[in-house]
Length: 192
Image (cartoon, rainbow, N blue to C red; front, side, top):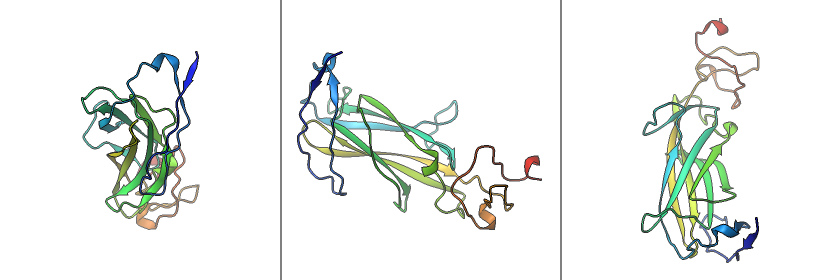
């Protein structure tokens, strides 16, 4: 497959100190794409870990989350953006959890994964926290747009007992953000 290089024009500053610096090439068979299109809107869907997709998916704290984003132009046609970045914030405090990450190869639809280590609770005294994934989208005309999606994290460290890794649950004073696989909380037989 041959590749056609595309120029990398400078884009306006994003206002957060991060400049877009893409360096990618499109396959030659995609060179028929109309790069004069302007971004219109996006759908952002945190994918549920269940058979049914709820309005606000819930994940256990410390588990990875997949978020799907689809792009459309001003006419509602599928759209390939020039560049896409994303970040994770606690909502509504807007405390930043994970700084800007690049989507390496923007397409009509992309799915990103928020790593498990970045989905830990910020405050173990809360029962749940809401995370917001903010996408920054640059179109081929140099304009920059934002789109977001949200999901809940459920505090699964409700036990006051210290496990073999030395982590203690929320009611006894939280201590760690990492939860090893197989760690169980509450009144299950494994904790007695």
